[in-house]
Length: 117
Picture (cartoon, rainbow, N blue to C red):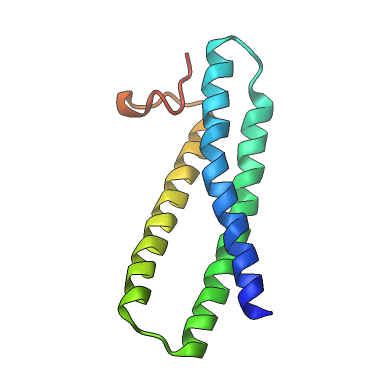
């Protein structure tokens, strides 16, 4: 039961974290076409909130399983590097959602991800 709950939360987190950039693309395309993109901002905010809840639950259950099995092998260290990378990507997505909400101008290197033109 514990492992299946952790897997379910992890899968929901990953689905959200990899779908959110697609919402960013739709936002940029809609904005450049002069369409109303407010619903995409709401979608991005709600998806981020959902995937954040799933991330916290998945990380908590993963930690609990790790402490329960007392595993400390090389594979675990490699896996932890990837988890830290996902957490960093999750936080970068938060920055982008915040920019969508504020409709702020992005720096030139990030202009393609949150264009306001």
